[in-house]
Amino acid sequence: MLIFAGAVCPGAVQAENGAATYLQAGVGARWIGMGGAAIAAADDVHAAFYNPAGLSRMGTVSWQVGSMYAFQDLDRATSSLSFAHQTDAYGSFALSWVHRSIGGLEYVDAFGTASGVTSSTEDAILVSGAYDPLYQVRIGSTVKILRHAMFGAAGSGFGLDFGVQCQPVLSDDLWIAAAVENVAGSLAWAGASSDAPARAISGGMAWRTLRQMVLIALDVVSSEGAVGTRVRAGAEIRPIPLAALRLGWDGLRPAAGASYVWKPYQFDYAYAYDPDGFSSRHLVSFLLHF
Image 1 (cartoon, one colour):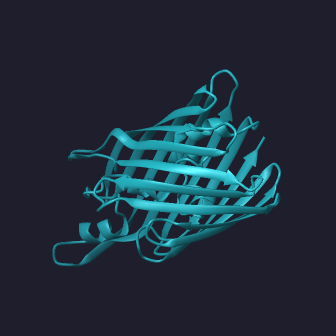
Image 2: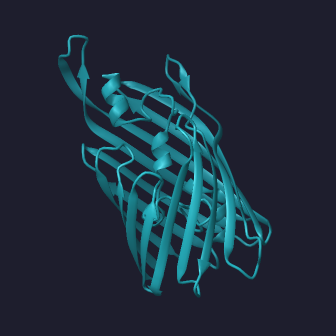
């Protein structure tokens, strides 16, 4: 039973990669369509998941609302809902919720007999803040409240992320960044042991050029339990203000996406391979700027 659950839901059991690994798959169809290369590029409400420092780069927008839904097979579903507010005096703040569920998991006894069906659910609430002590430097942090229920067992805990973004030259729209995911945290199971959330250290760059029509991003990610580092890359092209096209590489497989912008609304779509390694997935996101 545990072997099957670990294969379907890597974050569900105490694996070497840690708990809540589903969050490392990313949130937001725009950034997933760019292969998840968002450590330096993210500048919207979904920056809370990649690098919270990017929340301070929402521009003249005071509020953003974002949502995402991932269409997956094997009775799996991932969704998110996020709110962000930017102020002139106190920085930017965001509140986000991510939900992941897997249905149709069978109880199997020691003799291999199925005795029932249950589901696994994982929830994360993120409280994020970002500030710009200098115009060229942005810093941010995120506190994550984690909850996981599976096979009648429940666990809860927290995680803590930090991030920084820097613009070396004001005359060029080039950003470099670094982020640390789950620098501290724990997920404790009721009546059992505890597990540490999956840790990762990331660095990246993002360059917007050709009159703001092209965005190029590159990330290098080192995750706990993974062999070596993973390079993620992506490009976004906006031939007209109403539309964008994207291509990406998530370190293992390609990704692609597109957007339709009708201010203050933005609709994003992404096609990417499943982080669990079973198949592909389709993601849609909706953003409201006001």
